[in-house]
Length: 402
Image (cartoon, rainbow, N blue to C red; front, side):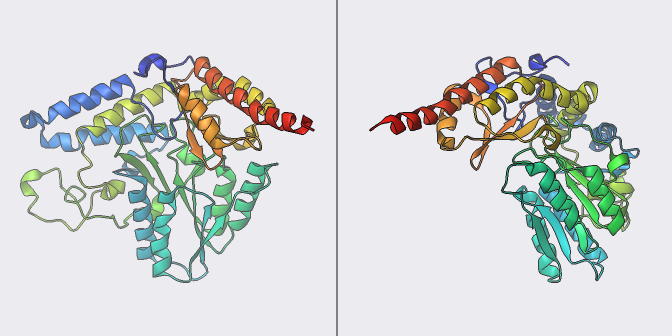
């Protein structure tokens, strides 16, 4: 794959290595949003069919992206937290088996994947959260973290909520092995794939999660405020977070909406948020999915891997720590600073060069996508190399002073 810089409107002097915070919009996605915005100026052109047709296209394309055989298992939501709240509501409604006493999370998980479980615990004091913290020792950190997580997935676990690519440092968690433990012990597999889908191949039929959710404004290259979710069989005939008119049977028949329905639409349709038909966002999401299906997430991952590889070797030689390739993603990973080098020094140096990354604790979060090229990586790497040597020189001079 060649870089896709021409598909985006980023200025030449901006080096944006921060897709994990928010992606820029591809030009065709931007155009779809503008067209959708202007559409509201002629509301007489919006028919009742338009409340459903684009949503169906989006669900089908998202299903194709994740190899889901039935697009009716896909729902449209406003946020990951909305999805997690829906999961917890259904677990509470269905009831918790007596032997299930814990929900397993990993340390420093994104807040939206943590807070919802507090409601479950407040309703069921017998259930607690077991958080598997990252190892303090950096040697074999990813390997040891995965092993500790798998060990926690025993018969007492009700659910595990996991991001395949850790949002803060890019640690990869082995979904195949996690799935096996979940099947063995009757554990619900809840996945937040926001930092994964779009830049990493994913197959619903292989992993078979009970629930998967991903916001579109990062690696799915879409707008802010729309999230896509997959619901497995556990949620068939479940309970939506809100009671919407459009989620009920026969809602396509506008003239009969006053004939209130007790039954929901088929599949995951009931889990759609109210006003999911968003005439601005959904056309944008559809165009973004078209691009990703064409580019293929596996190729995006390979592109990031090939682009970063020579620069990672240089950064390690300069004293920076980066996780072993087997236990981190290529599109998003953490870079820990050499001893005595302050994060504020790096922040200022990169800002001066108009290089945009994120910072988590005393580490840099680098996230690479298809608009990035060797110039971006060269400037980023040179800036870190230059600053990694400065504290060392100061220490040597002090040691030579009588």
